[in-house]
Image (cartoon, rainbow, N blue to C red; front, side, top):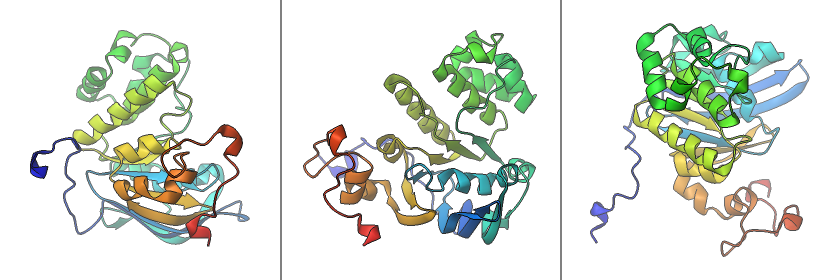
Length: 276
């Protein structure tokens, strides 16, 4: 078979661009002027791509998102060094409304829906755009069926649909997702992955924080591994999927593809290369 005839990778090609849609440079963040959460991270997100931020709990992934979307002030966080630029324009330290006005929408960890409001009220709280509302219901028919139901009575998967749908009501150019598969059953995780792929296929750039590394690297074009507030590795997703450290420490496999037993999780065969 001619390699050019191979259509197994259906992800759309990412158009090269001189200026990245999002550029984070040397970013350092502290909480309450004491806790050093980010220690000079640098990353880029190209328009039309999916970029994944990977790493353990407490690594600084959510802090990075808060710095990008202007939510640090609500968590007593401060950017002490570095910059955040969107389409070449400096937005460092902007309040939350700034990035939103520039086309950035975020789905925070834990969904953060208005549980006492109906599905329809949740969506309209984000925007009164009827065309955007129709598009959300077309994407998530389950939400259309439950538009008058209180959000707190939805299943976990339906609540995640609602959280993503609410973000899409703003017609974002850049969608920031923080742990969208957290707490969901495997079949629902697959559904979330399909949704993210379709959102990118419609032309929206995606920045994804996800502890399900296998899912993230299947979706992403590029990934950054963050540990202890630093980027310790970044590469295209294919390179990361084949890297021995990523395989062992993030994909839960040993050489040869065998999964480790739970009892062996903390007994690694070797030291991470980036800690050498």
